Amino acid sequence: MNAWTFGVQVFVTLFVIMDPPGVVPIFLGLVSPFTEKERRKLAVKTAIVSFTVIITFALFGQFILGYLKISLPAMQGAGGLLLLLVALELLTGKNEKKGEEPGLTDVNVALVPLGTPLLAGPGAIVATIIFVKQIDGVEMGVALFAAIGVLHLVLALILRYSTGIIKVIKTSGVTLIARIAGLLLAAIAVQMIANSVTAFIAA
Image 1 (cartoon, rainbow, N blue to C red):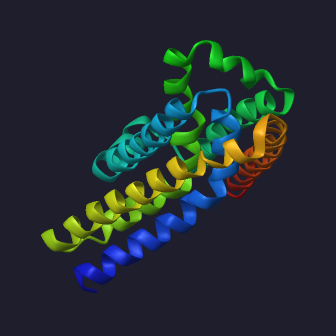
Image 2 (spheres, one colour):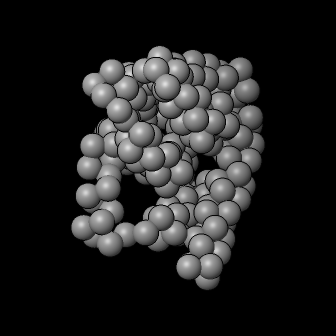
C-alpha cells in the first residue's frame, strides 16, 4: 500500500467513525446558549480538542493504555457515562444556563462531550492506534498525520458553518434541536455502555 492510498484510507475510516455531519444536531443543541461569534469559536475549539486527543493517542496511545492498564471496554463505559450526563442536561434544559458563564463554559463544552468522547471517542482512538501499527516508512507516517489534520479541518468547517442554521430556526427550533440532540446523545451513550458491558462479559 502506498502512502497516498493509506492516507485516504485513514481519512475515510476516521470520518465514518467520527461522523461529523451526524454530530451537527448535538453540536447545535450544546452551543445554542452562546452568541454567534462564540459558536464559531466553539467549532474550531472542538476540532482542536479532537485533533489533540487523536494525535496524542497516535503518538503515545499504546504506551498510555498499557501503562494504565486501561481496556477499550473501560474507555467505552467511561465515555458513555460522560455522554449520558450531558444528554440529561440537554433533555431537561439545564444546558440553557450555560450561556451565563461563556468564558468558562465554552471551553468545557468543547472539551466534553464534543471534542471527546463524542468525536475523539474509543472507536476513533483504537482505529488510529491500529493505523499507527500499519505504518511502514516515513511517507506513510506523514500520510497518517496529514489525513488526521485534513479530517479535522473539514470537521471545523462543517461545525462552523452549521451554526447559521440557528438564525433560521429561531428560539423554538433551537429548543427542539436541543431536545432531539439530548435524545440522540442518550442513545449513543447507552449504546457505548451496552457495548462496554458486552465486551466485559465476553472477555
